[in-house]
Length: 291
Ligand SMILES: NC(=O)c1ccc[n+]([C@@H]2O[C@H](COP(=O)([O-])OP(=O)(O)OC[C@H]3O[C@@H](n4cnc5c(N)ncnc54)[C@H](OP(=O)(O)O)[C@@H]3O)[C@@H](O)[C@H]2O)c1
Image (cartoon, rainbow, N blue to C red; front, top):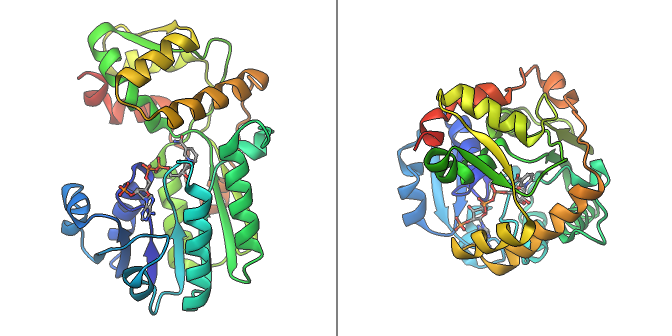
């Protein structure tokens, strides 16, 4: 039996949909059944959404009963380490065999864990899992292509991609590609004690990202470099939590220290998955980018 956490989140929803195509019963641990239903998880074949908190409680212990493989995802929030380490301990006590940890690729590109707490937290959780005695696999994606959907309103309204990323190249990966790998790991097992980094197929400047969105929507879209202060004010005005905004600030500083992104497609190759290009991603989500 397979259990997936974080099933109502950005990456978790795509992964659960991919799993639902496989006619295998899956448990999805969710904090809110109402949120899971709003995301349509209750309509997916084979998906049993169970309410519980990853940090503990009777519900999560019952949910882990009979589970052999787990996909571990939670939010990139300041409590991520506590949440995921507590859950790993629960997995060990429940007799889970293999945990696939959804991690991040920043340590692979040299982000300094002393300067970027999310790299540090992912590394500490990976260490905790490796020391737990459970079989482990770390799935380490780069930036998700889907994060550009957060800019869809400004793109559709003003024809502008406004980010403080001048001079930075990024190699974002489609969550759909990550989902295919996660699905194979959960259904087939194997790849224990491996760290699987994944990026998209191109390192792109923001001008190139804007060009691809423009081509997909058939409307002019240009990259407008803005200052971090402007970005920070826009995020806070849109209701983003201050700790999330601070984390993005730290991430930007690390990106400016390492402005070139690598392209790493070895995981796509191992699993025989054709890498989704940003142009394809933009075409798939063209309606969202067009408002
Ligand atoms: N954004 C990127 O570009 C990127 C790139 C590489 C790696 N990552 C990493 O990917 C991971 C997932 O990112 P995401 O954007 O998919 O996250 P997300 O959208 O914030 O989703 C996180 C999920 O975890 C659930 N969750 C959080 N705390 C929980 C708890 N205590 N008990 C039960 N469920 C809990 C959330 O439930 P609710 O819906 O109830 O809140 C949600 O379903 C993060 O660790 C992030 O660091 C992100």
